[in-house]
Image (cartoon, rainbow, N blue to C red; front, side, top):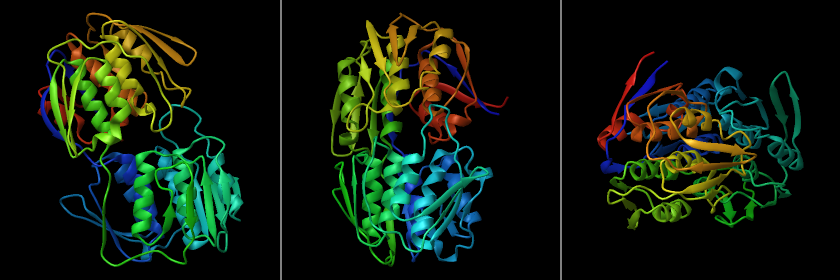
Length: 421
């Protein structure tokens, strides 16, 4: 198992092109199961979760081909199996997203209960409730969800709580359902919008995109000739590199990233003392060599501060000037990086769902272990500023969500390399 070895103390400077968003690519790849015609998906990031998803589609019998630019041609007309086996989905929460498309188009699906990061319960009951309201017969036994339906019926569903994957799964099911569905209290994340735009490109009739109420007029079939769709830029990858530059008091420019995707994050970086300038698809952060100021954050669904940026800001607050509070409202187990940051000298403590952090002048290198995807990023960020050499173990988590992170950080001047166990 690989590790990352980081020698801290280098100020980050330079330019990076932001990769496509994992959290857009995964549901869009699942949505290709709805198309009766081949589809080409572009701007797909090179990540372990993407590879796993393509393996999953391939094992179902879907025809796949990938060019040197990671444009993926997908033909689901060759599908043979309507099953997502446990060995492929056990490490990836997003595997549940094939349930809605398989059931809507083929009337049947057998999907193993998914795995993923250990950051909270993240129940799938809202997915199943929505599909049952659309007329599906669903049983859960032996670790598998078994679903059947002739043709799904439209429904009016109010999500009890905002759920990204729940919204995406029911949205994909509804596009082929009979009648007009209304989904209220839907997730408004940009990645959900990206999926909806893609579905409309295939011939779906979705309105209300970007709002909490989605209206879906069901159609008989989906698919158009010569469809190419580029995945949205990854706002969380972009935010991670911006925080990495801020913690090292550096200056970087990110390209191919609309700043509108990161408004809540950029506001907090400005509060931390960063000078932020933007264009239509680029962001520049400049700390002018200054130590960041502590910023308090509270996570909430989009457009508020994203839970996927909480760990990175926590790392920055460890060396920032002042005292901060970080409150996590989305996932109950998303403070597992705190103990590792304490090993590096952070003055930080947990009280219920809030972290209280008093910034220190410096962190010191230590061997640390990543526990989930974004926690991994926070430990890498901490390693960039720590005195000495930090060894980050269990980086398979980070490979699930960051496209060649060590290469991109090296490009910005960091001293970081991948090393085998």
